[in-house]
Amino acid sequence: GAGVSQSPRYKVAKRGQDVALRCDPISGHVSLFWYQQALGQGPEFLTYFQNEAQLDKSGLPSDRFFAERPEGSVSTLKIQRTQQEDSAVYLCASSLLGISAQGVSGNTIYFGEGSWLTVV
Amino acid sequence: DAKTTQPNSMESNEEEPVHLPCNHSTISGTDYIHWYRQLPSQGPEYVIHGLTSNVNNRMASLAIAEDRKSSTLILHRATLRDAAVYYCIHDPEGDKLIFGTGTRLQVFP
Image 1 (spheres, each protein chain N blue to C red):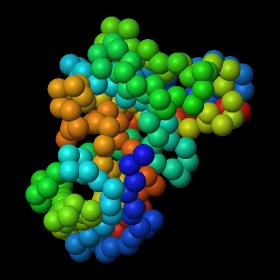
Image 2: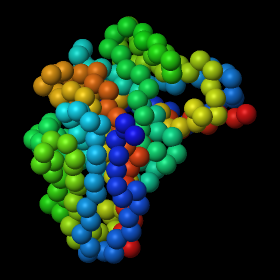
Image 3: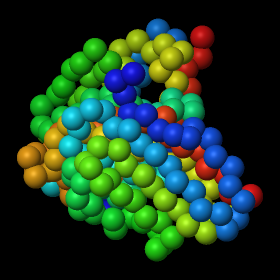
Image 4: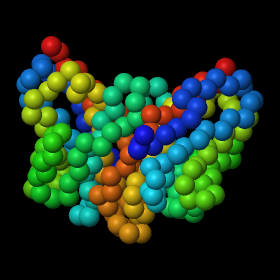
């Protein structure tokens, strides 16, 4: 399809296990975002890429969280030594333009369906 | 952080118009107002956005107050498929959308 694709859709991890979540953004989209959504809450910003550059990682909750987008397309969010509080839906989103092109913008952001992580 | 205030929940009957309010008193002159919605078990979906003027698209209308401190998302005829959490957002930093807890809209047949 032409939308943002995420895998796996569902992941159950044992506490202490490392996980990797993949995001395929819409082809040609410059901007890529990761969000974390706990049950009953709105999505919370984690990090932002413009092409391969990670311009904002202010939302990453700890140094156990790491994101990369080495070729400016596919991105991976890695969580090391998972804890129960990491259980959440991890949402990836992309948009056509980078923030430098739009400034404070009306840029439309397209979300994937999310990767549901449960840490037991 | 940007702050918007929305009612926790609203109800509507099918085929009726729905007005979803949002207060954003800290908005600056260059911040767009965005509305997204999230259906159950899905990622958020773009609905509409605007800066100063009222906006219309095939999904909804956005009415922005003259002082820009509030806005209203208008669904002209609610359907069961419109049941979702609706988020009102403004993005002062331009590189992220800061979501609140949104308004949960229930639509009854």
